[in-house]
Image 1 (tube, rainbow, N blue to C red):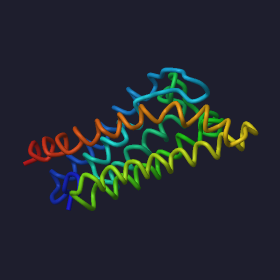
Image 2: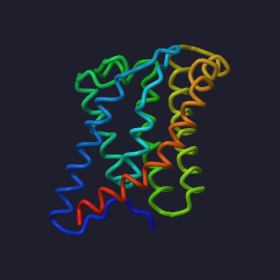
Image 3: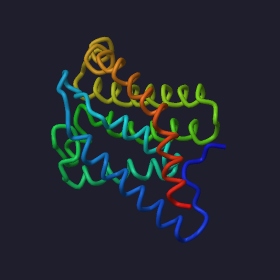
Image 4: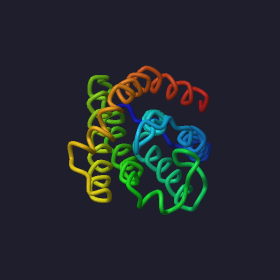
Length: 185
């Protein structure tokens, strides 16, 4: 099985907690950098999320994302455009932020439970689709937008970039995990 960094002793536990914190920090540094393309900006957040679950497995990868969200909710400027606060989470694009949690769980489980790279792709695509569902539904409710309008504004422009992020995660995720596991030993 492909299970992220294995936690077997005290040194390993400290190491995985440190890597979890580092991945949260990487998310906090890269996610605010945004290219506005409409109501939802393009960021590197989903790439960092996918790399987190590759490196840490689904549990600690998801924890790193939750830490990021809590830091943003507390007001640190870690969301797109260097914004933060609870208002961002409950605003029109907040569903995409909340959608990071099920995306991490779904993609992480597929990555962790199999060595089959095709299944890794399936998991990342399925996780991304669930992210889109959360975010788009939230956007539609809060803006009273029709589904077609929301898809045109909030999903379709992001498909090529998200495909590229999945490819990058697929190419580098297992390499990073192996390097970090080797450093632990």
